[in-house]
Every structure is written in structure tokens, then in C-alpha cells.
Image (cartoon, rainbow, N blue to C red; front, top):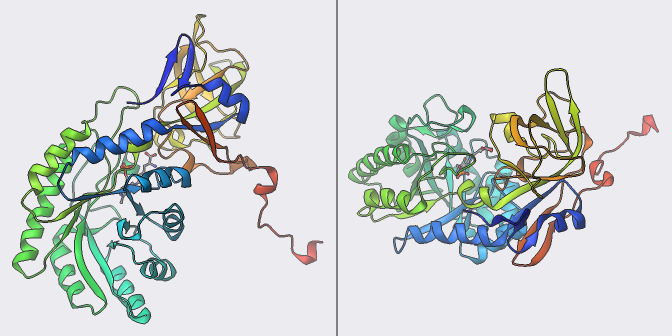
Length: 418
Ligand code: LLP
């Protein structure tokens, strides 16, 4: 679980009262618990015990340098999906030999950058990409280690936007074509085939799709071995879900047990790409109530955070718990909690029953540590909010609030308009 809890009627992160943090840095702000971040990594890592494994944190979930540095120090690597993410991972001190690179649209420049940094491997998503990587590597006089990302055609029970393992999705090489592609890869002069990769979706709260997908991969690995291709790494991606509301996802230990029972005789190093499960419940978005507005049909609690700060409710209809930073014993209210953005899609919760706040009250939007800040934007020319880390009773600003100057950085008015 996490380290946000009430002492009396006050919400704390570890040993610090949230209202003190809001007072110091203003709102909205993202707040992370160091203790939760590191415990979640430890629990996940320990679950795989002595079995050779590498945890490549999916940094798209939360890519603040301080958090990446914490994970690097604890031995984790990174799953990256762009040159920018690779840059971050390296800046944070992650070991390049624990970095894997996925994504269907790697550019030539990005491929070269990753090759020069000698990352552990590319997770290749098509035969076209395989050839592109070979040609970039050849020109640079380097050899690229690769895994093929296989699409196992597994249906998962999650929001359609975050399911990735069906034939109709853009991701990976269809499992039926994988053998042939491995043989193409083997013949390419500047490619070294070392692994197999899959990632079937995110926020999965059942073990069975992971098991079914892995079983399909293991059959393929046997076929590959029979035809002379030796796989050294099995990468099972990320996707393990968390509790936002009343979901009951498997504990990492239960998850690990199911995976290890399948691969224990594979003689392969296991790679894992957890994102949400490590950081999701380690972060909250703190926001202030600006106005209580009574519409003809609905009550609105208008807060200072909007869909540009946290887009998950808008984009996926995602549920995020919203709780007061100071509990009130007053009446409850059913209201939409909405931001200042000029769109009706700008909501953080719909028809939510909560204790009725007053203007100026602070609310914490829970489970915002994953895909919160990283998906935020400057829409409506709103500066992005700060990120703050709490460790015990210490508070660290790990990303400054943007100012208006940041909003126009890089923009230029052409001479003819001057
Ligand atoms: N590996 C690959 C190749 C991925 O594409 C992803 C997530 C992960 C690992 C990590 O998945 P996780 O363990 O976090 O489920 N923005 C969405 C989630 C998008 C996930 C994209 N890929 C959300 O807010 O729910």
C-alpha cells in the first residue's frame, strides 16, 4: 500500500502534513512518498528472489530524475520508448546495460543514440525496424542486441486504449510470424538476437493473461531453440495493475510465483518492465478548491488542477479517489470535480460523493504517481506544476513549477511581424 494516511483529521505523507507542503509550494502539485517508492520496488524485486532478473522500470509512468536516480541506486534499469526517455535514464545514472528500448516508431537518430550508449537491447516491433536497426548499426560499425517484441494475441480486461497484445494492435510482431522474423534477424550482419519481449497491456488485475501470454512465448522459444536460435532473455513487459478504487490486483509475490513456475527451467534471464505498480500509489496530486458552483443540473467543485495536470479521468474514464487534506465532519455532497480548462472533458471525477468542502480547502487526488505528471501538458497555457518528494519528515522540491516564461520558451515571432 502507500504512506498517505490520516492523523486525526489531517492527511499526512510519511511524517509531513500535506497542508504544510501546499503552503510552501502552492497548488496544484504532485507529491511522492520516498518510502512508498522504494518499498514497492523492493517488494517487487524480492518477489523474484534469486531467479536471475532485471527490473527495467517503465519510465513513461513517472520520469522525474530524482525518482529515476532513486531506482538506479536500488539497482533498477529502465524501459524507454524514446530518445528523450533514454536521455533521462542516463542522466539519472541508470546503467545502460539495464536499459531496454521499445516502441513501434524508433527513428534513425534515436537508434544511433541508443547504439552509441550501448544499451542492453532494442525490443524490435517489426521486420522493417529490424532492417533499419541493422543498417544504422552497420554504418556505425556497431552490433545491435535485440529482442523481438512478439504480439501473442491475448485479450485483456482493461481500457481499450491501454490493451496492446491483440493482433489488431500496432504493437509487436504477430506470434505466427515470429519464427520467420527471428531467422531474418539471424541473417542480418549487425544484429545479435538475444531475447524475446511481450507487453500485453496495462492495469491488468488478473494473472491469467500474463500466464497465457508467457505460455505462448515459451512454445516459441522451444521452436527457436530447435531451429538453432538461442534466447537468453525473456522480457514479460509490465502491466500489473493497482488499486484505484476496489480492484484487487494480485500481490507481486503471487504474480512472481506464477511467472517463475513457468520459466524456472528456461535458462533465461527474466526482464520485467513494471511502471504503475511501483509508482502509481506512491504519488498524489494536491489541488485547492476554488469555487463551489451550483449548476441547474449538477453541483460542481471547481479546483485549480485540470485535465492538463491529470488527464487519466478524461482520457480513460479512470477513477481516482479524491480525499480531503483536512477532514470535515459536515454534510456530504454529490458533485463533479472539475478544473479550469475550457472543455467539458475537463473533469477529475463525475458524480462523486464526498464530504462537502469549502472554498480554499485542499483535496488529494490519490493514485496519481503513474501517468500523472508524465502525461501533463501546457494546454490552456497553464504552467506545469511542481513535483515534491517527501522522505520521513524532509521535503524536497524535485521539479520546479513552470512560470509564464517557460510557456513561450523557444517560440519566435518572425521578422515580418516585428
Ligand atoms: N512496457 C511497455 C512496452 C509498455 O508499453 C508499458 C506501458 C509498460 C511496460 C508499463 O506498463 P505498466 O506496468 O505501467 O502497466 N497512460 C496509461 C497507461 C499506458 C501504458 C503504456 N505502456 C494510463 O494512464 O493508464
